[in-house]
Image (tube, rainbow, N blue to C red):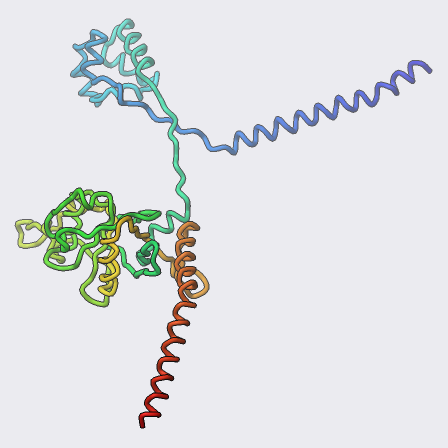
Length: 339
């Protein structure tokens, strides 16, 4: 009876032990699956500190093998370090290296091999989609003014996120380089004409501007192109009567857009105001609702601010309209009395 009671009393403890074992097994399986699902880390060889093959062999007192290394394709130390042990042994026999030389080379490879983890930066999908938008609006801060733009074909796809100060190019056609310090790190406003779009961009790039707005001389806008067809200075002859486009001079790192001539007055006035800034807002016109909207949340806030400013101005316009109506009515009464 006593033995039966001891067995029965130990049963809950045994069940608890078994449950803990099962739990530990499940946790280990889950951790293993998580490790398997995690992306494998990538490493790259650090090459900044590597000596040349000639310097490496001089250090190892193996200068006589320099031509042998070169003839086998090992023209850089990087290739020597990438050899696996089997390759190293094979080449050592082919090159008739002694055991001592092989051991020296193996030790040097081990010492010089330094790897670092490759950090892959995953870009926000909205930022990636934003780069493909060629149409948008230039919004002037502290103003209700905004103007349509089209991005140039040779423009940097990554238009600035946030606001930038604006200045007027000098001379205004940007066909020569003026005061570069005045417009450095700003969005330069330039007028169309007198030279190609690429020449304007090249001159302003030399002045280290952050972006370019080209004001057209008509009520239209288009995507500015680069090349000999635009009269750019980079066109060159091939010797067979054909033109070959030299794109090496095109400053593709700069955001370049065109606006209509209706934007000229406001933009030129804005360049004269201190600390006035502009936003580039690429707009997605494929979204539902039939309108064009920014993709980034922070740029949607800029649109909201402009609409809010217009809403604040609406009562003022109503008062002006009411005043004009009263004035017109009084004039009508006076005219009736005079008649």
